[in-house]
Image 1 (tube, one colour):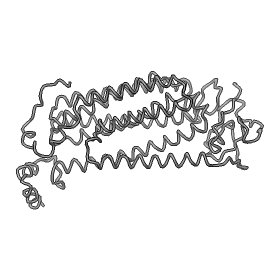
Image 2: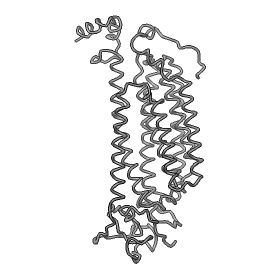
Image 3: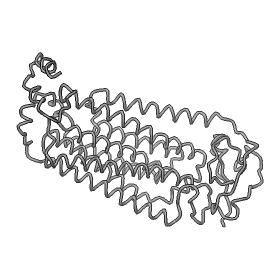
Image 4: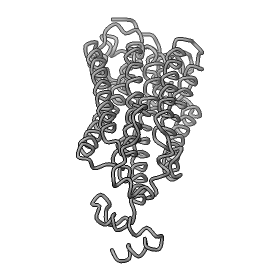
Length: 231
Length: 184
């Protein structure tokens, strides 16, 4: 196996690289080069992101259909949401996406300290997002704006608002779980970066964690106008 | 951070510089990413501002259009789709295609389905749902009349749905207003 690999690479005159790669534990033995390993990991990540799009897609389609069925209820219900908090969270997530991509860029350029800084900022932004979301949830709980059978908000003039809150909590809740998962992934990457595992040759985990984080951002970009803004 | 000093190339980097990583160095960069972030923030302000203006049904279109522009910016620049090998973009677009198929299929069904009135529809009042009126079924003025309260839907019956519900609205595709219910 190793023999054929070396020969293979020899043809392209990159023997010294292959030789070095054989001793680099970060290159799995079933890949010939770092580039091949990177591309394979990237395809795997995008396939996963595709399933995520479809996971949230089901909720988006359900939301669209129920919104068409209960336009007044959805209109009335969404007035209970605070646009300003939603906008604040949008800005926080967009900024964290920027710091995530900057972390990838720093890792690509072997700037370990900068990568650490950007990953930390991303983590702080993620925590901020969850704190704001927590305040919003708390407010909804107190007012009885809860999903399905738990809905007990008083003084409604339009019925069926519980349907909106079923979607609100399902969609933002699932998104919140993704934020938590993203924080976990970024923490893992941060620890590995502190150990000095990444440089311009090998930074796939930084790239993939950032991709996941961008998807979380992407979903919120659609959730924010749909839940908070559309009238 | 963009004004940081030049990259500290470690020895590994120096040795493997020719290892096909070179193209990545030409891509993106702090200036482009900062410009994209600026664009995203401006679009966020625009979409919030637009929500205070009443375009009627245009509001949904404007909001989704702006969201799609923002989403494209994130996907193209932050997610590197603009510079990646095409496989990533193909996978992503296929997932969006199937999502569109899902949405279009459901919407055409919503529009095309005639209103039906199931004879075996039983409606029970959910606990603490809407107070004393919750258990009553209002006299039906007959379906097709705007504001009709008859549960005339072919749509799904969700547990906890109140009898005043206009699930028929979904099947009829009429977007008729949800009937008013007296306060308790």
